[in-house]
Image (cartoon, rainbow, N blue to C red; front, side, top):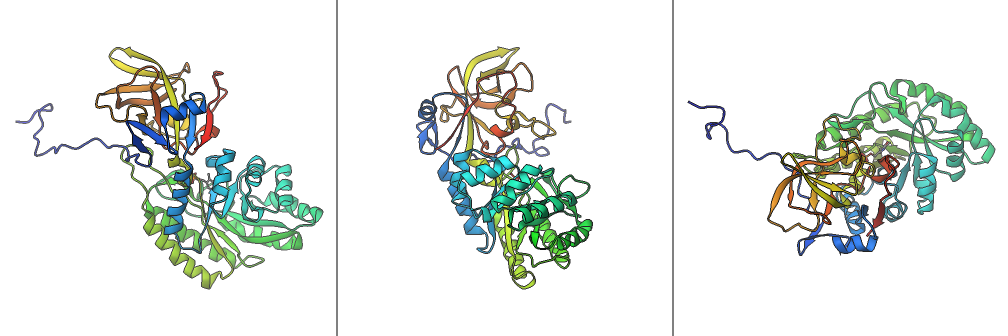
Length: 425
Ligand SMILES: *Cc1c(COP(=O)(O)O)cnc(C)c1O
């Protein structure tokens, strides 16, 4: 008879716990992680402090190259810079992608400073302030209209500044992106204009006349999706919806932004997205668009997929404590710099990001340890009981998949600790 502690091995095959996807984008040399060609300890010395974020230029370029190779040439690739607004990184990417998507007047300035061509910048976001609309029209960027309220001021700005306000309509679709980490379209949302109200909005735009230049549609169903089928379904539905709405448009559709939502593996059991079927579907949609919307360029806008895997967050162990048998590595970094890795940026159930001891990559001795920060809150947790190389004071903890929604998405002021540094290597 089987008991709970002695299961029959034939009935319960040895199954490994779900593991993180291999973080093999960075080389390891002499037991040390190499970022942007520089071994980690040397990089820390060069940065001059811990904690820091480091983004690898070559990996950013490689990711764009992989997308270019996979996607049909007709599809335009945009970077959604809210994922990582570090100026040097935006400048690096601006030269590699076809356009930058911004979500505030501040991001608009940063994109233009980075050398982005205003004709290839688009500005989305609910609640755009009058000054932001003014900046956008004056800069000549495409404004993704998210509300009936924005029509009149944009038309007034177009007339006043003597340049038609370039607009696309952001549509809140009548479907959702399935298995998405964060839903941003479908149902009741603060983003965009409900699909069923768009014909009336297009009539208002037409009535505004020359002061508004209608250029197309923007649809963004959701974020952080690792299922190619779900992304394909959303792209097909987005295309069909845009095609229906185009019949009401005051001018031909010149740009059709199908959103993005391409995810990266953060948590145990997650695997990298399969680009090939998405690319094949986009090729089919591009072929249809060439017939059905002949002036339209298809756009995909990606944030974390472009930058997330190219970045690490590095903190130094300042104490090693054992509490009732559990090892705690206390570092100089934590949730105030990296809210996402602490599990407090939208996650429902906290899970560990991939973490390693970056200067002990080849060490055989391993143990279960938790990595925490210096804040007086139990939420300040970077790794909860993970298997890591045995680490001590002075060692460097690396949090992978940290190139997106890291520093700019974290409450740096909380508890008054020093700010981290960001480097592009
Ligand atoms: C946040 C956002 C993105 C980027 O999302 P990722 O998950 O980082 O790819 C793209 N488009 C819009 C409209 C967004 O708000």
